[in-house]
Image 1 (tube, rainbow, N blue to C red):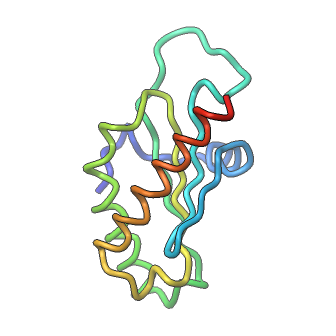
Image 2: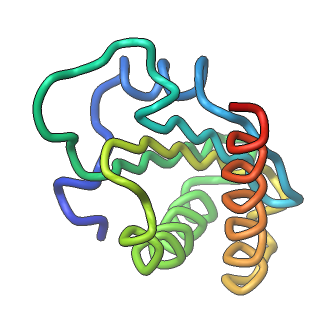
Length: 125
């Protein structure tokens, strides 16, 4: 289970992250990363904890398969929460290939996507 402060709940947060975040795809998933410095609005005060949202659609499989993929993604993401800077929003969207992927493959794809999204933003900034 993702800790409460790290869960993305509002539809507007998902939509903004998908629309404005840096998108990087790998074989089993697509990552949308929105850093606080990417946002046009400058908020006064402390930044919230990094937030994560998961999207696992029907294209991945039936209910049992989708929930299995969701559990695996959560298990892969939780150890990486401390690496997310304050105020960062991350949406991980599972692709149909995630249904048959191992947890190790999901972790490898997530790490590669996060590295690529961070590197691309640093170069393009």
